[in-house]
Length: 181
Image (cartoon, rainbow, N blue to C red; front, top):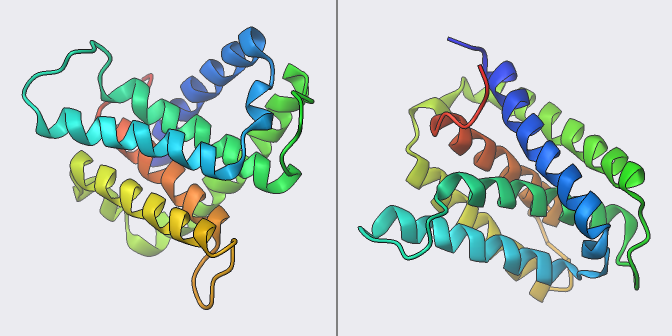
């Protein structure tokens, strides 16, 4: 069996490649999005995945894999927005956008390594549907924190929730065998 690190990095390679291509096509237009808009984009994708998991028919051919990839990429965009703030115009060239992407990808990866050590790869025994539900729960938490103007009393902040969302989505893609090798 391929290691978690190898599978994780393979999934992220695919996500990053798509992000790079879309950045070439659209530039950094996403830089104008406020955090709640990104949260809503991720929520829409997670709800669609949940619908695909519970309904027997679908009207759009795309399955869960592209939606999980979208969740990862939008979550990394959100982490970049938290770091940089919202811009009134697309202000990153593709090279700069990729540097920020890779910075946050590395931070999230290190978090996964630490948690995976402590939890003993428990995610491997989870269902993809459970990972989807956890993503939706994290999004509900983010929405509540956003409603509280970003303030929490004792809980993790918005960034920690986005980081967990990325890791849950990567784990789902590993379960769905959406990686090379």
